[in-house]
Amino acid sequence: MEATVGDRIVVRSTHQGEPERTGEVLEVRGTAGGPPYLVRWAPDGHEGLFFPGGTCAVVHDAVHG
Image (tube, rainbow, N blue to C red; front, side):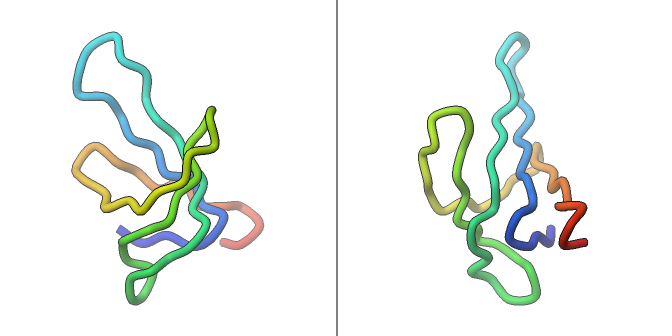
């Protein structure tokens, strides 16, 4: 998984009825766009380091590529 600043992280729930989580990548701390990522999570603005798992996807920021 590779991300850049401004991309969105989408974490799909593994439990029926639970919503997906989305957040904005603020920093990329790994090499070559790899994790971990500093993410600001919606809707509460909580920030934290994130190591993606199998239910995650990166939605690339259209402005930055």
